[in-house]
Amino acid sequence: MALFEAVDSAREYVEETGKWGDYSVFKSDFEFGYRYDLSGFFKTYDFFDVSALAGKIGLNASLLRRYKSGLSKAEPKQKERIERGIHNLAKELSQVKF
Image (cartoon, rainbow, N blue to C red):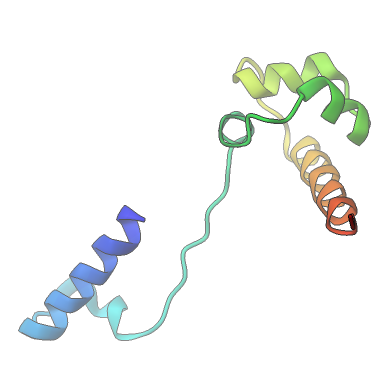
């Protein structure tokens, strides 16, 4: 949240002082996009069993562990495949009812 607080603070400052300068971007709405690298994703969502996830999405477990540790970097097509697999898993999980 620190980034959003900083943006809000800067926006308030320029609105109060009228010193827009390089901050004219604050005159309109904008959004931030956030992307994980694979290592960061697995650090954030550390409850995933990487071997089981690899099996679920049809990927070599050893390769996915290397991506997780940052020892190897995935090519764009491989990242898309992993992302698609995780999204499919999320859709599947969203259908669970107890």
